[in-house]
Image (cartoon, rainbow, N blue to C red; front, side, top):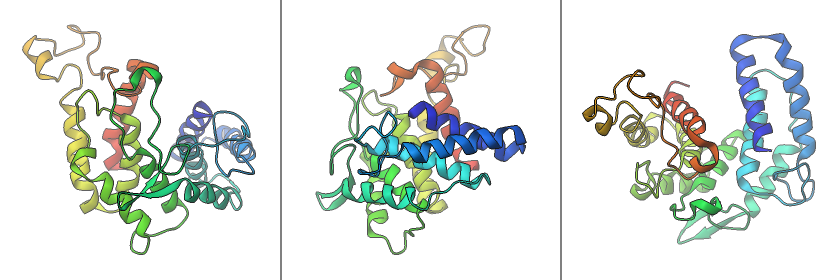
Length: 255
């Protein structure tokens, strides 16, 4: 389902910027399939079609794919899908240490980690996904205490982007960026500055270590311009994934 939703997002955005009619019907069909794949009893999505269990991560990707297609002008019927997903997100969110916390697969649980990435710190990734979903559903930060809680937790110093081995998590950075970007420049500023520093200081060819060694162009280094796959998901996605996420995150402020 991750691959399916990511493909929908990419094709819907391509349709939005190109107007290529050949893309419209495939994206529309993919969205119909995605709505049908939602768990009818649990309200969310999981890895497979109507798997019978849900998790907030895949649910977030599914909702974002549907919303991206809708905003691109593609006919997407979400009258039942959005409220049903909202029920799942409400059910999976609990009060923890005085703040609202959206869990991954149980109320207030920590976000997921790959088996070989257990050493990475947990973060409010699912809060970012839930926050973005609530904004899609039409909620406002002005009158939604849950959105305010998500914002305040994500902006804590311990959860700002930082290039330390146990804190590099581009999926978290992506969800948090999407969410905070909608809340205005003042809210976005501190997060953006930390994000840009983490990424720009560690792009290959621009790191202090690369500059000192003279590896400052593509003829001196095959990895020039990329990001090393050292984050929580780098072991699965590799250098291509890590670099794509770096570019997407840096472009977030222009969107």
